[in-house]
Picture 1 (cartoon, rainbow, N blue to C red):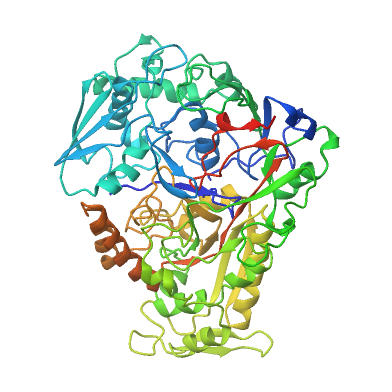
Picture 2 (picture 1 turned 180 degrees about the horizontal axis):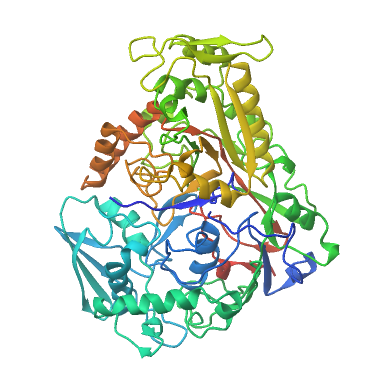
Length: 635
């Protein structure tokens, strides 16, 4: 089955949150010339808001058919999708209801899908129109589906067994109704809604064209390649052309693009044709500012007198007030006098992949469960949460996040304490019991394999005699607490007889390296060992079913973890027909894989949102989507 989601850098990461592939700025601060009406005095009835994007993130690409082709490595990031594209072009289904990542019926373009045997019926609501006056209807869904059929391999999250391969046929049954005939009745309805239909973004007929004029991709798949090539070319003409293009000005979302700079500064204006819910006295101008680091953004939050102001931004956890026990927010509402602080826990997984394909000798070590157990015991999640995260974090112990709590989480996992809490002595004992011996000077002893082989107490398959535990980890720069966590892990590893060399690199470089290695890659692409960028935010696939990150050969399985039993359990989740069967299958998989440690689990950090006093931005969405059309200044 297919995979999807976003890499994030900045809520570790995640992306983004989380869980993204971002274009890092050359400058070390925000785009020049930005201004905001968000000083405290504006709270009496202002209409403009300036929003600081998370460090390293920026808008770059308008076409909501994310591609794998260069130079669009950033297109599927949370920053570009959730904070840019979704504001202009609404997905068919919207996710995130308060703190839960479930389907949001109110903000979706369509009613919940209806399943019957092998068929799925989608009925679009009648109140949405494009900004050129045309209705958002079934043909707009057909346009996207036909393009997926024709150009699916260019889709950033394409998987040969997912969309469109799992659909036998698709056709309209009315102006606002689309019927999908599936190839099997064995697909989980929960999975198909959350991880397949969630990917669809209706596209306007104004885009159904080539350089020579109007086309008909919406009714003829054979014409879609030419349309795709035209739209792809138009989307890559440069940021100045994006803002002035009549193509991208046709939107069904609440916002229209006014300007976009090469550094990623975005200015949008409210789309009066938008048919969805909005606040009574909502803002009408929305500006996004890019930053390269937490500190650069924090400097503006602290001192808005230098010509820059931020109305909604992010507070580095290292600068946050420590929350009292049992609270999500510090006793001091904010360390900044003109702002209010909120803690947002995103629907994401915080982890660091091993490279099981590593060709420098470490891959064989990573395949050993005992080693993964020992290494996980060197990650001081509690210490990171209490230290550089200032209490704003949650433990990660398995493939399904403990928070926000969902029905997908195994009760067994939820109710058990962390089995791999920091324990340096136990880690050393585990290695000693499996063929390794500390050798070298007393000040820097390193474990060396002295019992090669595959028997009980041996080092394991593929590990030669005299192999040392010398490991390299790359981690994303720009996030203070990640740097602290990486250095602490290296220190703990040295105490346990592992020489861990840590190297910081720009977020995009870390992610680009981790996802460049596949079983068929050139050897030079597979020499990384551990990569820490932060989190994976579940979007546009909102279920943590494992087909995204842990199924063998999945596109986003960065380290290429591949276990037959894991694959079997994942497939069982995708084929569970009823919600009860689905939850049962999820619990079985979650319980099993939690013990297998396919990745190094890192603490799930909170995103700390600072909001200028007098501005109401409503509840924070755990799916990491924003809805500025609902933001308003209090009278």
